[in-house]
Length: 330
Image (cartoon, rainbow, N blue to C red; front, side):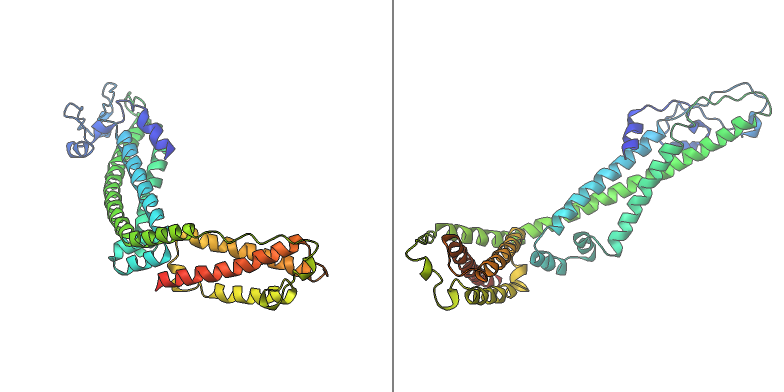
């Protein structure tokens, strides 16, 4: 709508031709009482002295202002809709179940109601742009009536009359649509307020859980391998630093990861879901690296031992986090 803003800033000359309209049409466009009223027909202008047509207030500016109002309201509605779509899946689902159809359509951003709203806004915006570009200033020049037979001037007058009616219709449509968009934006703000009230207990519980985890002392740092115990670093059982030990821990990791589906995943906040994805990616990369090294290594060094311990600790941490999120989902 850049052209609309430029149109609003540029004054429109006082010869747009609106005074050639009947009194009712001029009033509909907001013309002042002192506007010159020309009641004669186009044909009767032949043979008369040259006349400069007077104009009412800037109809082009009115259309530009109305179109800008539509744009601002639509942008506000889009920002609110984006905020609603950013809600966690569980909260958004529970809200949609208890909302009227119009509010639900605004939350999900689809459906017949939302598509109809978007079509009306797009059509009005396109009409305003096309009109301002094609007619806004092209015909805005003094129109003088010359001697008899001035058919070109008659055609210009007819075009200006049609242009004035088009401005009136477009301005009214833009104003109505802006009012409707503003009403819908208020309704969506109400929806978001309900969403925040619904999410606040979950956010408080998550904050308390994070604070509790931060108070837990960190696990002691495992001793680094020395030449005396490097040969014993493989260990025994499921957590042995070997191909079999890594594969056993990988099965536990995959089994725990499958438990995060359904209600557990829906109860998690978006940052927690993103962190889970990063953990999965890191653990997969570490597993493949360890399997490749252990398959071609007889003796372990300190780096391999540390990577094994890191992988086993990651599996245990995922199991602990799963228990926490499952309780929160219940």
